[in-house]
Figure 1: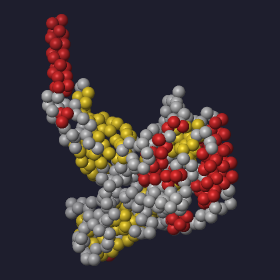
Figure 2: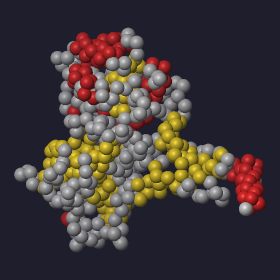
Figure 3: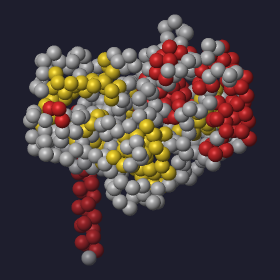
Figure 4: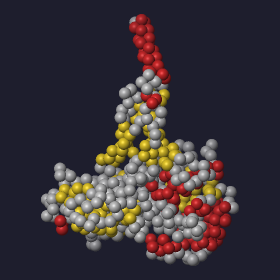
Length: 540
């Protein structure tokens, strides 16, 4: 028996020696391989796929965000996370964020290939929307199909064109002069339920979509025309679709959730209900008896939860259309969910407190559920988003005990007061007093208050986007508030980065609506904050 174990050990060591020799001497020339990969998509889900190496190994996938290049000293790529797999594939985000991936193969004794060249995803660089919905001859559409596509960065709305045959020219920014049947620009999210009943004599149509800006100017080009086979006998979809497309994977959402959906054609009233367990009836038409919260809204495709959801666990939500009498149109939607993680065992390192600029959202139509419009998404450290849309400096102060104190973060990024700037009747001293009180509360509980200076406004854009006027003294108020912020022990000055060429107003290239920075603006905010990590309090 002793001889058996001895020879087994010898064989095992010999095998290890062979593996070590192969990996360390690179007998298979693996170190000359630059792994390449492509993004494959199915049903809106994206997968990065590469060729399996001719050697038993596992793979490390490093995710990076490409920086804007406007902040001195920032690297080209900021590392976000690492994950490992034994398969030559991994799920990736289809959100319009400049994500890049590097793949490294590992053997038993370390890396056997160099990290690959950065591999981009197509969703940030595309010139036109990428369709998610595909209706083929084998799987045709009803006469009222949902047409869904990946969102385009900074798009305010979309235009869909329906054609009887392919357009005379693919792409471009103009409607096709031939084969055009109809089009609509009244689409404020990345999906639309078309009404094709006027074209029921056709067996096959085509559709394409383009993104538009605040003044309905084209953002990029029309997508390639997509065939649309029809089945006149197919039932119409009768429930809205929770818009969980283009999610940013493995990132924390704000503690004030936003629920968004793709609406039913012609339906203007909706109700969202929130549950802590799946509903008793999958679809149905009645409210679930165990729901914990519900809210109705009209003429929109998103509801902002007025309550914070900081408690760990899995939450479920769904949406239904309503008629003017409050009756369900069709049925409840499919179920969507989100998970709130338990607080860290050690103290929370950082949180961000403020109004909608912190909460997220941008380009008017993109709510904070689209995490690409949240600056906390781009921070290279964990930072819980405690923002709430609509806050003034005073209402942010009022919820300190409710939203901040239970979490007790070591560092609190504070950016609030922009809504106070544009409101008449609120003075600079009012804002300063609220910020000063916030600071006192933080220091009394060993929370480091790190103030961000207020951003300039663009009153013309605010008027176009929100049909509201801005206090004529906003600039004076901002200057006074920011002078106070810069005099505090812990502050980060982001204001100078956001002006237009004349140094007068918020740069339209960074903010569609003149108030909320869009994706590049949020990326810049995170990069500036990261450059000032020296003001953060380190955890013991």
